[in-house]
Length: 318
Image (cartoon, rainbow, N blue to C red; front, side, top):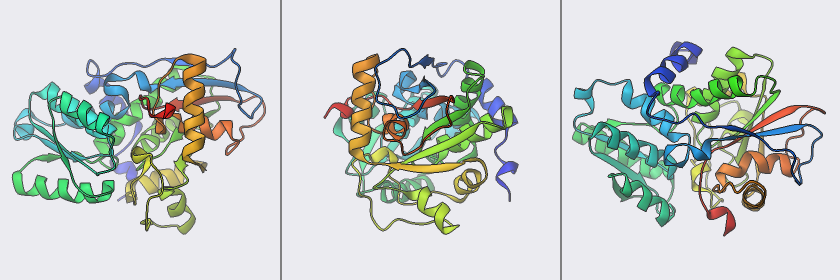
């Protein structure tokens, strides 16, 4: 089955209608005039999804999944696995629906993130060292207890919710030439690429992964899904060992390039965002800016580039 059978511009527009009132329309900020170390001659704008409810775009996907279901279906509650931000989105969705939510986290998840998830009323359970191990436990709990499982990046309704970011960017920055988007499992860039390319086919979509977790970079090179032997980054929100076929298929077709940045690159970019704009973002949230700062991706001269700042936090200053 083609990904087009489950994710399309129409499903993303439908998600936008369903989640209206659940999420915020986040701003696009022109980065200039600014003192910045970027390596290209053009215009930079920042899509500040770090200002989203719960601090990241993940509220969109979780709300899209929730609102695609009948209330009776979610009565027993929601369950998921997360590196942190998706768990916040699902906890928020459970809070909105007034149903229980449980979030399985790998042991590497920052305590601050776990406290925020619990603050939205979700039960937090640590399991395993990486997202993939926590996810197996979430799937088992869903089957054993009749809970609604919300996948972090491959559920079509989640992808459609994330795609609403792309709808907003095209409307807010209609002259954009390039979108630069961080990749964890691939749900965000999948949804953004489907929406943005449908509305403006000439847009270039560039993905950014952590050097220590090049899940989709490796999969594209191999022409198939690759499971990484190990994760070597502290950025847990960008660190599944394997993506899913639907994400690989969309990215293979619609994303022009995936580049890599290391943890120090992201930390430096997060500090610049704070010092220049008072935007506090976690390392993964600064990945798109890091790719431009170090020249991992070099846009064409004069291009208008929109970098998606996708998560809030203070770990960029550690």
